[in-house]
Image (cartoon, rainbow, N blue to C red; front, side, top):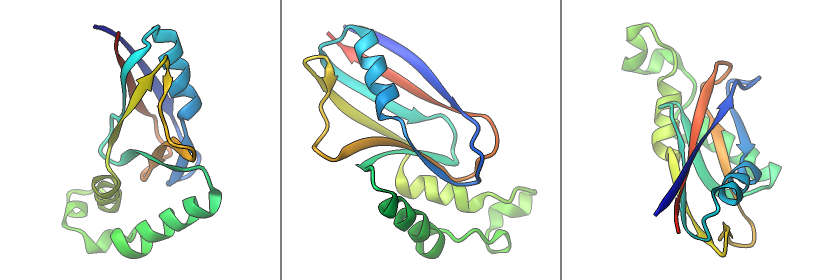
Length: 139
């Protein structure tokens, strides 16, 4: 089995952002020379996520509003974690809800995604340097 590891670095302008990383993941699959296997895309921070969904800005807006209004409002006084001096408990809960990694099949040397599927990095506590690991494995 062959493997290739690559890191993407982010320093977002906003506290929360959704970034399409599909093209970067596809580039790493191509560079790996693997024709059949999998690619793992994983946020290496506990206040960020990686997920598969549709590249549609209205949906991104809906996701951000759902996280703020239903899952974990950004209200530092609300969370015990923030008693440690942090203010990002909501980001931890958002990451836990959305998930921190995805595995995508590689078939004939390409990402094997559905028609509208794309791979996204979700930043829930940004404006500082963070990274994502891309690990392609297969034959």
